[in-house]
Image (cartoon, rainbow, N blue to C red):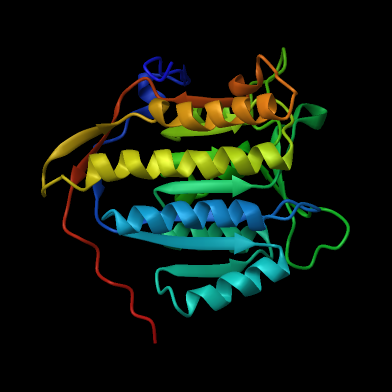
Length: 281
């Protein structure tokens, strides 16, 4: 039922408290698409399609993409010649990734990569542009919280296996991000197929961007609004469940795999003057 918005609370009022966020257009989204051995092109297609529709509906969006998949990098580079609000960078190292995030300072951060909880160490695993047999970048909790561009985001999406998986002794990476001060994070509490991951993000971003358009575009300078992400999960959860049903593999708990953690305190944004346009020499 879309009226029943489901989320989990992590952290405390102290860990999550920060002042009302001033929003200047455009909305900034950073996507890191690099799951070794998995084609991220369908993930990219779903994300970019949602962004184009949101722009047409009146929400300016700037997109910055990092990938370790050479063919996808070339495709996005070619697209960026026609779309000035899309930029890309190759994944080479954790240091480079942190630098890109800290300069861009996105409101939305999206990861499509492998996740792991082995050795009681929840982490993300990303392949660089030079990797040919495995992922060589690991992002654990301290890495993510130590990167300003990630920690100060409004929402972090971990479309990765086990990113919201917990054990008896260890909280999930998604939980710990929010407990560590990130405003809100979405993760997967089990292993998911890439097809389910594609389906999830292709339905999630239309819902997220519609929510942001409805919330942000009416804001005059100084006006405030509350951003609640819980309602945006209904459509992608439903899509996963329906796909399994269509394929004759109904799974009663499939829709529960995506998990949203949020702070106890509501997240507030206020209207501000538009950001200056980026010069492209």
